[in-house]
Amino acid sequence: MQEFFQKILDFIKDFVTGDLWWVTAIIVAVFFVLFLVFFIAYLVSNGKKKKLKKSLAEAKAAGDKGETVYVPDPKAEERAVRAEAKATAAETKAVEAENRAFIAESRANHAESKLAAANERAINAELRAAGAEAVAADKPKAEAAEQPADVTKEEPETEAAAAAAEPAAKKPAARKSAAKKAVAEKPASEKKPAAKKAAEPKREEAYTVKYDKTKKDWVIKKTGQTRATRRVKTKEEAMRIAKELSDKNDTALVVHKKDGKFQKQ
Image (cartoon, rainbow, N blue to C red; front, side, top):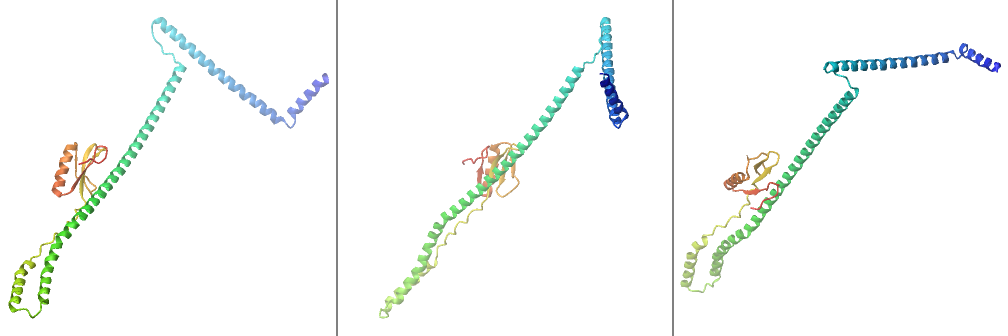
């Protein structure tokens, strides 16, 4: 047994005085740092306890005197910090919601602009189709108006050819009567009825009445123009002004409902 303890003492002696002395120094330094940490924590906690005891004593003394003394509550301060953090998070969420609403409104305005452009293209197509139908309807009338002029023009020629084809053996009296007949019919043949000109297609222009959801008013705009002709608050006033403009300029009138669809005239 004595030999065992002697071996342990020799090992410690070799460990301290040998090549591993720096390990011993590190271990001692670690223990010293831990001791300092625990000692400082003890002092802080003891100070807090003393401060709390002093506050309680002052509160008790003030209660005896009928006065009120503020006693700091760490939990109340922690709750206040948490409430402030929640309020900040709520403000951040509100700002994000406003940004999302602004983006949605911008997308709605863009879609409305696309719908207005599509409606304008549809109006132009309808006007072109109406012009083509007007030209097709007036073409037979023009041809019918030109047909009598061709017939009257050919009548003297046929009669003159018939007179020239008569044999020379006819009597002079017959020749004179044919000549008089030709002279009498010549003025009538010279009067050519004026052919009706084909009705030119109207210019593809129209006044449109539509509702502007952004500015919340009724817009009167002429086809092909980017800026509005007039802006009014009521549809009745817009219809009246657009009717006057279309009658004055001899153009079509296209009216939209409040939802953007076409209104039957």
